[in-house]
Length: 265
Image 1 (cartoon, rainbow, N blue to C red):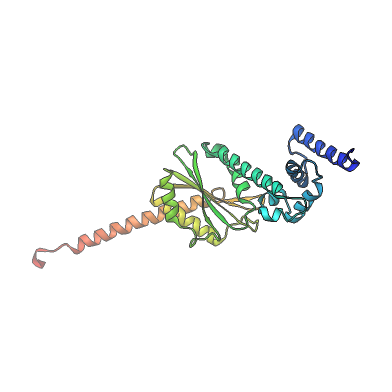
Image 2 (image 1 turned 135 degrees about the horizontal axis):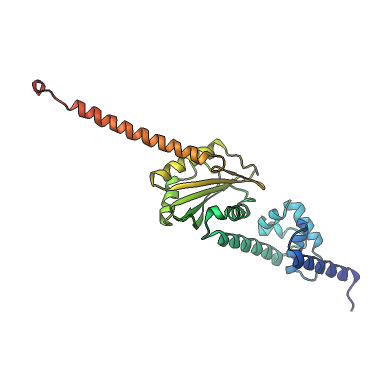
């Protein structure tokens, strides 16, 4: 039995999308067209345009579709378990690829790659996630850990656990990152206090904090870029100098109090 004109039209549309991708990658694609391509891998003989548009309508963006729970994806007509599996697989492969891409690379020579990885893995999370990147003496990233999930503040994040983890990884310096689900990366007072506490804790153990990055929607806030890392380091240094001076004064006073004149003995 010959195929219907609708089937031929759908197959032709899908083929044109694939040829467009082979020729120029995803440049010029709408979000729903990218989702359509992904869905066509799991359902090669069915028109995937409408389910793709429904997915974008529900989850707003391509990123939203990639980060959506598998069960919610399958609530869309035309998106079955095979499609949901394919979408989650692509998302995880991309995340792992970007992670491997930044490991063992000098951080200051591949800052964009680091941001790309952080943004991809953290931008659409519904809860705050606190991440630490550990670097060696050549400023190469040697490990990356997700440490805390939930509200990120000085009471939820344990500096002790972070420092212990840094020591286990033989790190010399660290970069911290967390996301703001609201999309606004502006640091709260709690974010600033936490960063200051972490810099002080790292300084005591002679570890250096290079940056704390807050991931928002298509933008980020860098504590180093805004000069706050340097400011907190100076605060720590001044506190350290003040502590040493106070200790010297106490020793001096103690020495005077122990001095006895001959007729006082």
